[in-house]
Length: 377
Image 1 (cartoon, rainbow, N blue to C red):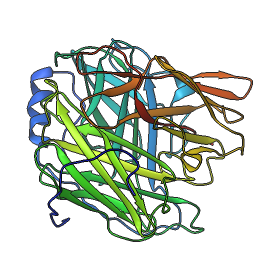
Image 2: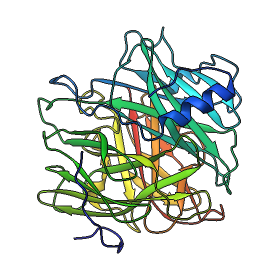
Image 3: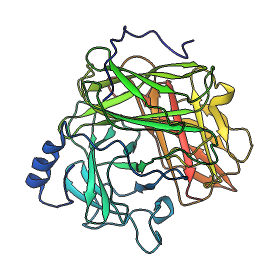
């Protein structure tokens, strides 16, 4: 069955970093350009727990000073003593940032970014790489039309290997090149994810062994482009008893289907960055004109609710535990995209997320989306 919309036929294709943070813009751009087409290793040593390494942050200041430490209640990671070793951010040009996650250097993994803006602007990943003992993620933000623009955003990096024990829920990700070749992938069942190209800006993703025969879980997608503004989304989702088929569409700043790299993650009864327990406090919700029961999950057992439209308010009871983070991804055909209209609010244990969506010209409109929240513990 299809969870959403019709898509073009897809031709299957077999599935098959590096910069340091600097403040000199010409050098940053030169090295970022070198990231285009560079694949990352897809596998690593086996572990019983998932993920191996991770970090998240919210850049609350779009014009940070060098070595800026963003909101400490909205950043955390898997390195020793995150409170004493905070995430730092350098602004390296208009709308261009490098996020430094300390002490989690290593290959592979994926990154996701969500703009926190209500103007139609968006943010994307430009690349990521090890930098000494840390992991750097480059982020680019753009206004409608494609001009770089300083912005706030959430960012998350995570990498996994091995089959988790116990096997609670399901989790998988893909980092794909424009041709459909897979630069990095993970599947908590031990299966191999695959990507096929369906023409310019369209890909078909196969996640074997994950999910259910009806829509269940959460999806997040982010464009990865070191040079040009790009937005990616879930265009369609087809669950089956043997796995999940997802259609990814990407668009350039002119709202035309566009070949770029991208990341996708899928989680069912797991946090957006992969783990099951901990964290104890996480949730997600898919709005597709309605909210299918198994796509609205709250780790406390409470019922999530949805209200409003521009922006929406996603209410997640009993799981507000900072430090925490959130992501949003648009769903459906066309170049509509979604962001967070404002940082998430916490009150009496409840989290409120504020997804907002925009049409091709940057005007807000009611639309469909996935959103996910997680605490660190």
